[in-house]
Image (cartoon, rainbow, N blue to C red; front, side, top):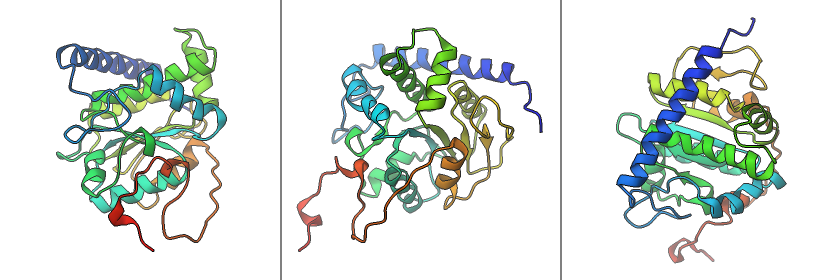
Length: 265
């Protein structure tokens, strides 16, 4: 199948990101304490907000040296907390960061993890950006700043930003739940960075190879297959050695704090 003419859709996606960036900028000005603006959540606030320059330099270098091959931008929520935990752990085992935002039917992926006792924050690579879909722009902002900081790309050079992210940052969006018009606009916005979208619901697909390495939008994927499908569509090759130990392991788990009641002899 030939690739459809995507220019109007890509432009609509960019306008969506610009609008969301304005919304979030206003929030920073009018509600300065809405986000923790640090690596870890607090006892009463799990929303971290956009990565500042310190976090970008500290975490962004991992995308350069290969410690972190990319990230999954997760929108919405899984049907159950158990499914959310399974998806998150599978992404962590692939050494991917997980950027979370938006809600589906009043549930949010990040809140599901917290309810299940999973530690979220930059150290565990489970980053709860914000409660609304507008926080999705923080993921695009992180990718853009990585290209500027580590790729030597000049601000405004959208073509080189696309090429850098397509070739160096293996990221994708994962939509869990009903995809609204705004969600789909975010999906096509991601294509401007070379990032495809994988959804668990039936939505219009964009399958031919073109701007993204392979497909652009893939839908109706089962939850037990969605991580593997996302990695396949993004063209990411991850080899994880299976070690027979009773705990999850890998770079994503290095920042996890182990409580006393979780220690066994």
